[in-house]
Length: 219
Image (cartoon, rainbow, N blue to C red; front, side, top):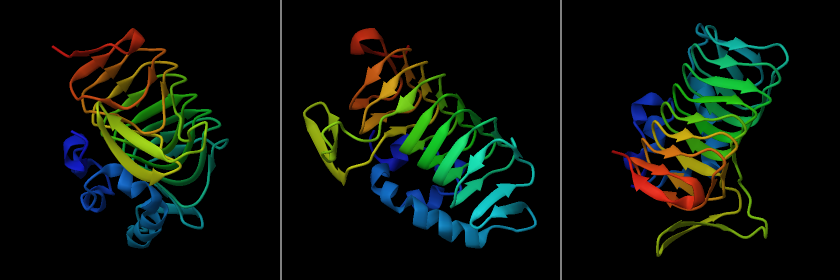
């Protein structure tokens, strides 16, 4: 369930064919910036406005005048970027997404129909199709001791060699309000995270992460 094809419907992102080349999605994190720069060269300029160097916004997208968008960045069709959103750099945001007030995004891929609508931080992360982060939920992307991030799945460990790695959310993941996804969190598709959760490691697909870290199958 940790592999790229297990987590995502790749047709729902402009980066889909590129991500298909990585066995595990976190392998793509350090290459997001360079891939966005390559994608910028291929965009249909009749469909996108270049509002800054390597900053492209689809003509059907709505961006609040108070939002900040750093380069490189691509914002897809019918996406809404709301008041005081802070898209720092290296963000590929798909179609029909919501990036809300006071949300910060950095070095991340948001698949189509992703919603991060209120006070979220999304850094060094990939959010799958139709995933949603409740108000105040964040991806914590650096360990407190600055050591390299390890993905832990029970007794199994994956050494990522990354100092910065937030979270990977599969398709249709729902993260409850004010939850913290610790560095190296991977959440399988169609899973729900209770509000106020502190999540670490791998949460299986089709499950519910409850208070106290109890995980049950979704029935």
